[in-house]
Image (tube, rainbow, N blue to C red; front, side, top):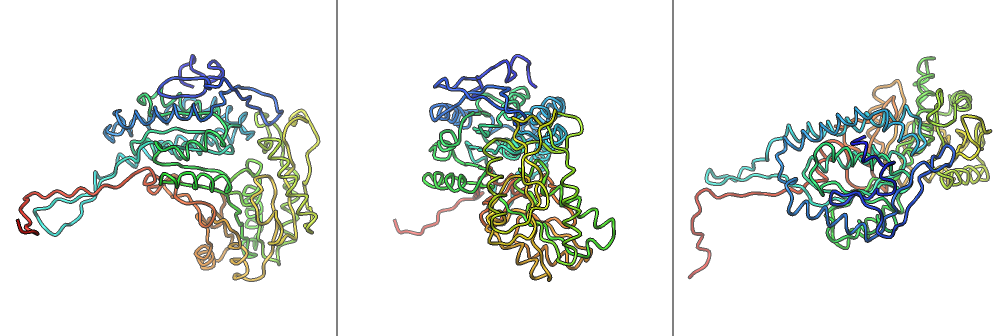
Length: 509
């Protein structure tokens, strides 16, 4: 981490950072952070509220209006972002372990997340450093110089989810800083630890006082206040649809810029020709497992809807269920564990409810559907749930329509290409999807017809920092990553300079 005297453990519950100081909640309230593998508290953080939020926003406002960061040369901002990337690499093992304990994922997943966070900081550093200073606009006269320049939005409020705490924070913080903004971030109240650690790294890298602020606390107080605050210029939210609607409604009162990355119900379409060879079949099955069960399905882009051609359905689903039963569940820090627990008791209960409703509506349970037997790697008190495959599903089922955010895979079948596309697009969301086929023409046709923000062909889950990430429909508005992600944190200004001004004489007098 940064300086050892500033670690979250030694700061105890002083986890609100405003104006360069680490503070306790003004109310004195605290929250225990539980390890989902055993439900045992391993940290205590401040439980901030509206008063703490106002303090942090005021610090960010001062730093933007009277500070140097918005006017810092682009090369210097880029250098600081690269420095942060280096610190992330230095602390990779510590942060990967902390992410595992915080969110329940395996340590290896945590390490990969830290690598991706460092990549995001490097990408936005390179993007702004390589840009032209402005876009010249031809005014049709040599006596006029006209240029469009980019300026920071101002104070950015960031509200992040619990499934990828540090990665989602980096997708907002890196472009916001690259553009010259100040910010206040509210991480999920149940997984705040690595975001707290990132603030330490930003301070260590030399970010000026007041530019980076964090308030740990719940969404109904801290998040709601950030969304409505008159001194916030932009709010970027990643989370569920219901909360996203509330954020948008609150932000509309002050006409803020809003970026929303919401839910997904993502189809994984498998054509029979993708399984024509043993290698093709094995790859498609393996990737279907990764799509559905990575991080116990707690991924907004999880391929929780398998839509498979009818002629290969039985063989495909049987092999998928056989492999799913062999996934090694356990504490993410244990050697050999492939999948960790759900993040909370509430999330497990929600998953259990979806499975029960699916079975009541006629789905066939092919594997899973229950809590696993306890073991040394799986304490009984942990929030574990077996990878579950539900066959013979249809669009009227809740489990097919709604985002589960758990290790549950539903199976639907099709006979024709048109039917496959219709099923894949039959969702109120439109975040991500995939198509598996050996036919290049079909791959392009289907990908072109899918109404989803990201479409993978013969793959699932990779993302590129330089590519935009966002969705259609109720999956949100705005984009993260890529040039469009940077543009979310900027305003455009047209500067028109008349080099030889003359009287216009529109009026007499």
